[in-house]
Image (cartoon, rainbow, N blue to C red; front, side):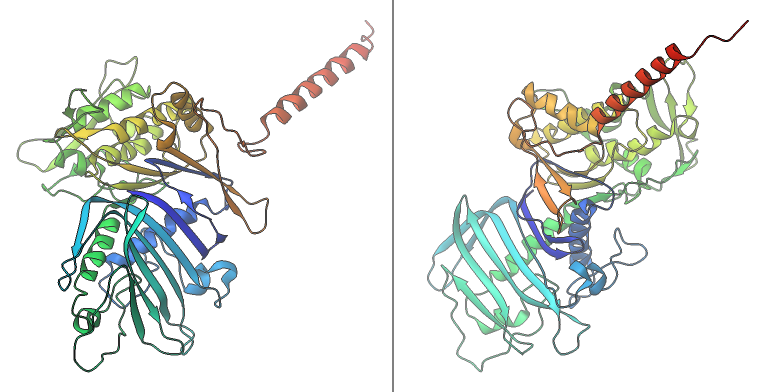
Length: 466
């Protein structure tokens, strides 16, 4: 789970400052305010980690990628190629990482990793990216157990490795230049060959890759629903960037049972989805059925409120088809997942948007096989109703205050700032931004003024002569 994040010189952000990441992390703001850039940056790093090209510092994406960011100049702040993209983040490890110095026998351990890095255009070519430096810090609570940094030598393509709390010991051999950094985060193979006790850097590389393999993304526009779905028995990694694998995920997870909290009964995933759709007031019943035993085709049937008839998914409101991938992704994702979502509330009635916030609380409390699923939700949203319900649940002690973080992208300032919303234990936002969700009071006031003006005009108008 990500615990904090900071980005500098990326798209519209000169500096986001440190973002506290919670199990439910929310980002609000006007259109084109830069709130989407937070998720885009994380997805670019994920794409890079999963790219087959080990020398690609950043992979901005192609036509089939979650994000396509173009060239460095298109993604860097103010489109100034002289700017360096700098970033750091901390995440909790699924289990304690223990490292041993084979020479001294000293043990180092930590439950968090902190990573910072900087990327720039090469001085020599002006078009190739290079890593200026990166640094790992192994943290045990608030204390640093050890750190190791790789930094580029001035005016050279070579790097030097330095460590704190740990003594790197060179091998008695000819010095080897450290050149080929692996993507934006990986130590070159020469580090292990150059030092007698640097094998542990491979554990750090692996921890980074595990972090980004746990991230799943669902975009704001989900694919339209079909009357028939073909499923060949595969288990998809996720519902897909547009929800295209939603039905396949439901079918693949039919043996899984999810509990919505400690000491709450575990139910089949499909039953959980149907329950949440019903609680949101969208349907009465939901099921996925095979067309026949001889075919690999399935249909999704829905019974809406007030009706006795079952109908196909395309025959019900568009909002149901748009929220279904959201619900499935939240409960289908494996334990330890980080789910990035843009506008999960899109096309939903305000009441359903409020209820969706309750679903998200259930997601972070959910368990499987008697163990917490430890899901983190990073959500970009425009929904006041979603936020209001979370505020209410904080006041009611349904969800602890520290399990929710919320930020507002403020473009009234130059450069834009990402401002934390200060939510107290009563659910109040202590620093509510001006016109956060529009100027509601202004609309009410102007409506009252217009109504009064009409009444005055009507009273003053002479009656028509008979």
